View 1: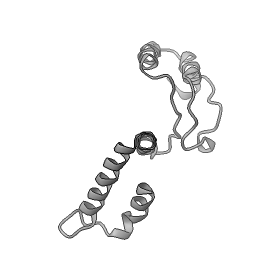
View 2: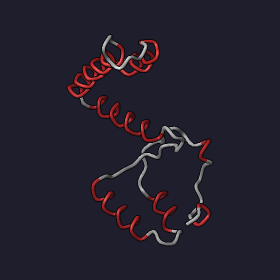
View 3: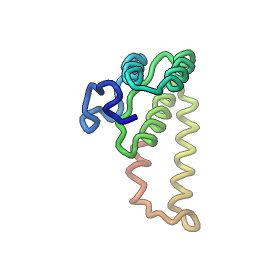
View 4: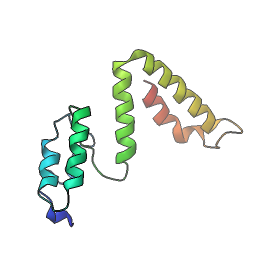
Amino acid sequence: PEPDDYGAIPVAEDQAPFVDTRSDFSKLEAFYASGDGNEVWLRKMEEIKARYAEMRCIRGDGNCFYRAIMFAIFEIALANPSFAAEFRTLLSDFFDAMTKEGGLGYQADAVDMFYQDSIK
């Protein structure tokens, strides 16, 4: 199916928020319900809804997968201090592996901004 075969997306992709607020699945269901051949997708959505009460839309711009994963990790870390401490240690070890001699060879400046923002 072509994109025009689906329902209207309420916001142009380049103007959508990078990470939207939590919402139910109604917009996504309406989007896929109007296209042909989406029965499998709609059935899978019922399985997802049985497990999760809400979802977040992520802007599809090429970095969406990484943004979704990192946002989920940070959201879990905010709610779980012991996970946050473990994640901070993991990030520190990862930074060392990327920048130390014999590691992956990245310059510390190349990853430091991400690292510093992530551990705050």
